[in-house]
Length: 124
Image 1 (spheres, rainbow, N blue to C red):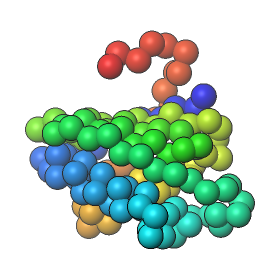
Image 2 (image 1 turned 180 degrees about the vertical axis):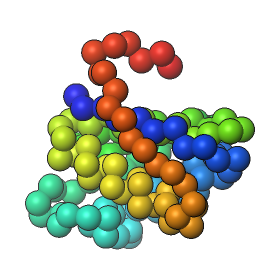
Image 3 (image 1 turned 60 degrees about the horizontal axis):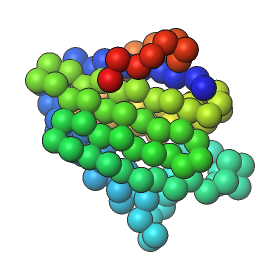
């Protein structure tokens, strides 16, 4: 399972986490535009269902059947980790999240993804 992670330096991490979760919840609603507005034709990858689980500084967004994203906010940064079923799904989730966070941060966020060795146990 391919996995990537980024740690975004910002003093607005909790705000961006809440904003992304609100947006993902709206995308997952029955009347939403879903992910087709976020790259790729729906027919190419099938319909993606979104489910958001959120606490104050932590969220898990499930992009069913593509994978999931975990976000953790601290006073100094927002950590985003994506676990996907394959590289194509990983790219689709990464592009969706990256575009939204860049828009929320008005292009002032440095988002540098790094591969994670998914054979190592997750410390969280």
